[in-house]
Length: 252
Ligand code: ADP
Ligand code: MG
Ligand code: MG
Image 1 (cartoon, rainbow, N blue to C red):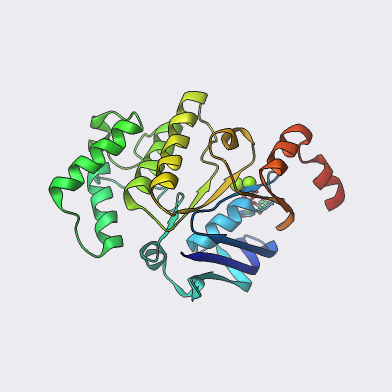
Image 2 (image 1 turned 180 degrees about the vertical axis):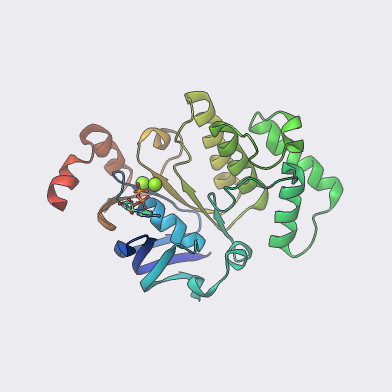
């Protein structure tokens, strides 16, 4: 059992006018095997939380802690975070010229495990995972993120996650820009990992749609850089009916 703890997290983002405070005291604990949905209106700081966990240099932690089994994540480099078992879907958003998906996956797996995967089993694993995500085998020979459609980027994220088998996965707006079929396929990928490992999932989403496929154990509503309300799956149902107006009115 592992635990990802976020305590009193304050984060400022670097802007042209200097640092701008965004997160204003976030407390959140995710245990192995749990799925937490982070929901909230646009601009409430959801992606800032994801980038802060990822260690993006533009996001400065000004107070608070992020701990993985008691270890200080904020002291870790981006690579160390991955080796410690954190998977951050936005970690590799850029094009990687001349690096194919197949090579990229193998390099990432090698870096995280500290040794190269056995070629025979690995090739089969990649193929099986791609099949399940209904990805064309030729996709493995394309350069990472080069000309990927929105849906291909999301599938590639989930493919990485399934193969790297992290302790904790942070998925930011994995549902955005997906049609219903792609959403189902991507959600099935997340659910396969949940079913076959004790992964803890932080599912960040503006919309309740993806929660019909990936069922959260806990729901946290973000408003103005803070958790404004928390509950179980029923809270997501309530948000689907009522939207965020109630929270926005009280945030003024
Ligand atoms: P969400 O993901 O919930 O929509 P974000 O974390 O992306 O929210 O943004 C929270 C707030 O921080 C917004 O007001 C946004 O404009 C601001 N912000 C985020 N990143 C930057 C940036 N790089 N420069 C300036 N402002 C930013
Ligand atoms: Mg959210
Ligand atoms: Mg966002």
